[in-house]
Image 1 (cartoon, rainbow, N blue to C red):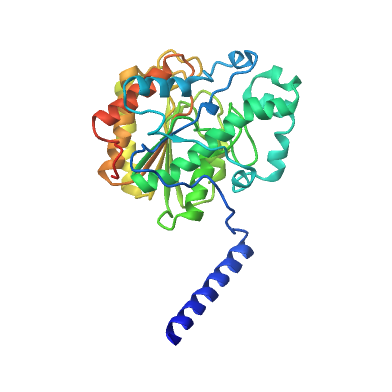
Image 2 (tube, rainbow, N blue to C red):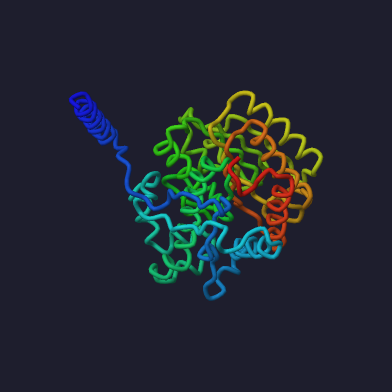
Length: 357
């Protein structure tokens, strides 16, 4: 009994010392509602109807389909893959969650409608009262951000997870832009580093048509994060400073087609995974690479996108690396159907399933 009491006391002392050390470093963990356990009947697919943005038709002033996330889920339900009970309902990221990455100064900036109008590229937003902007525009972004953080933990638990939204890769800790108000990719990774002992190395595979300058700026000097980015060299954001953070950079020309694109993605992904074996892959699966996308400038077919997603998941599954997928950009009405078909293909090939992998 004396030994047990001493052991318990020593454990208490070690815990207090650990807490004190964390407090010194500013890493004392806050209470969050975003880390949950799945029921055995649930898929690690995260979504909320609150993802979708609709207000006075203002969303139509941006080429992004701000209701695509609900359409993706609708298509998956039509195919009987999921229902409301088997998917995970996303929770809104709260201020303490956002402060893991963002400064209070940046979050206060979002209380100015003009700043939000600049970030969303919808100028009439600037004249609206900010409380409306918070509810109708920023709350959907915060809920998608919460969804990405949740999916990070679920990917570790199940081997894979998909946030039907998210992928705000142009937002860094101090600056939003390109329809990205919160740095969900950075947040998901920082949460894992802080809260999951098994995660000390992460890889971002960013296959959106645009350079992922937000997470690149956030992880510029962090050797725990390995970034592979494949993007159209001629389009937004052209952030030369952020490119310094990319470990494996593939810059594409206008109208790159399937054969060249898939060969480059597969070859360079294989080489990247030979260089480092991460504890998790965060896959930014933008569909703005689709032929005809007015902002992406590439010429990838529907089947090319489905094959791309398949090859990324095959690479992760082959190496038994947990993978988190976010859907990111895509500016054509057909992209929701393509994303749903890609997820269905992953399921058909048994690259994703409800069971623990």
